[in-house]
Length: 106
Image (cartoon, rainbow, N blue to C red; front, top):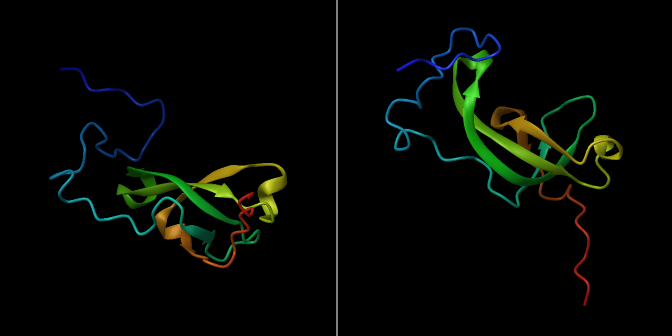
């Protein structure tokens, strides 16, 4: 069996296989779909709602971790040029009052 060759250097991470003991050894995600989050102190202070999550290799930790898709709130600073963004779990924190979701129409 030939190993897959990745088009970029991932610091020699063994990405050919899932983490040992997968999925039993995978920690539960901190955030769930629908949670309101913000990036931990960053210059832009973006925030939004979790719309997706996946478990993926993280280069700088030489490990695997949860990564989230965040749909930016209308009043989030970067929302004028991007609708959603990706973030590692360690870059996010709960922000229950920050999301400005539209009211349901009657």
